[in-house]
Amino acid sequence: MSARLRWLLVGLVLLVIAVPLAILFLRTHERVTEVERLPPQGEASYNPLYVLGQALRADGLTVQSRPRLDLTRMPLAPGDTVVLLQDSAEVPAPAVAALMAWVARGGHLIVRTPPIGKDEARNGPLLEALGVDSEGHESDCQPFHVRDDPQHVEFCDGRRFAVTPPTGITLERGWGDEESRVFARLRHGHGRIDVLADMAFMHGKGRPNPTVPPNAANAIVDGLHDKAHRDLTRYVLAPNHGKGTMWLVYASRPPSLWNRVFYLGWPVWAPLLLALLGWLWQRAQRLGSELPSPPAERRSLLEHIRASGEHLLRFGKAPLLYDAVRRAFLARLRRRSPTAAALTGDARVHAVATLLQWSHARVQTALTPPASHDVAGLRDRIRLLIQMRNLL
Image 1 (cartoon, rainbow, N blue to C red):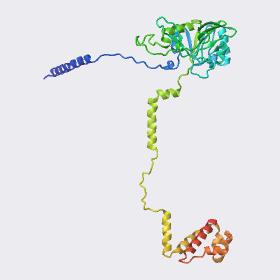
Image 2: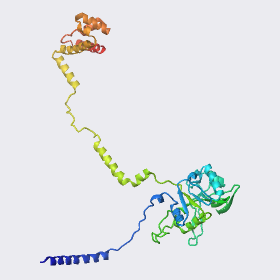
Image 3: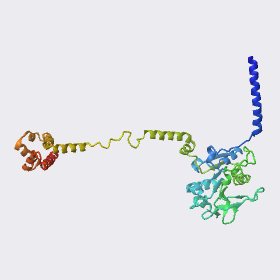
Image 4: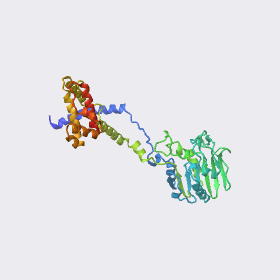
């Protein structure tokens, strides 16, 4: 068989196998498209006003985002707008005076009452300067009439307030009732101040809408992506819209480095931590000894010495024990008092008694060997020799 015919047969066999398999696969499988939404990344993960800023930039407006209110880095000009999502009670009195002066020159300030979650929420210097009182007020939904959503409500999570403008500030428009409002537009000089119970309708987070493509502009039907919320946002931003810079103070901080390392870097630090724990476990000292324990019948050195002494006493070798203790005493005496050690007989006894301030008879008894079977005398002399040795 030629090589050409052989390869032709191989191709026919593969074709006979592949065609039925392809038909079977196409008949038993269906192509399905699934869309998975990833969590927000970057600034969108911690800035609730990120979508609002992007929408305003798309309209050709100048937008600046700030995590906190810092007037030293925010050169406010007449015609600018400040959306203060930060808790208004945290604004200090000097900043309040600067904001009020800027509003009087034509600025537009948008603030909110303290969150409902704070049990001890206070008005703060800013709200007190505007005559707004939110202490003791709770949250309650406010109906917002929308043509295609007759049951639409707003400000369900915000703290309502009462407003009594001081001299120089007038109430231009309010929303709610006389004692608990959800929106108030105040006029101060050439500018305006909007006080809202909540700004949740300006946020960019929401739930996906399954009826529209995921890349559509209204793919999220909550937050700023809702049509009613966009209309409400346009109304709130209307006074200085297109005149100056939009300053969005979103009252948040980006995640810290340790937060990112812990939550995003775990594929790196978790294996390293396990490796470190394994190395420490390998290098740690084990409980117990790897050497075998000594036999139970093995005796200590003290027991051997005691047995040797009892053996010598039993066989009448007591003078050997006395001589060992006496030699130890004389060795110490030669180191401490060589003159007394060089003497012999009564002269040595007298010198040792004078040195230790003992009686002559006591020293004489200690230096005299006992009888071979006098065990009591042996113990007494050994005790005296040990005392004399310790006193040198």
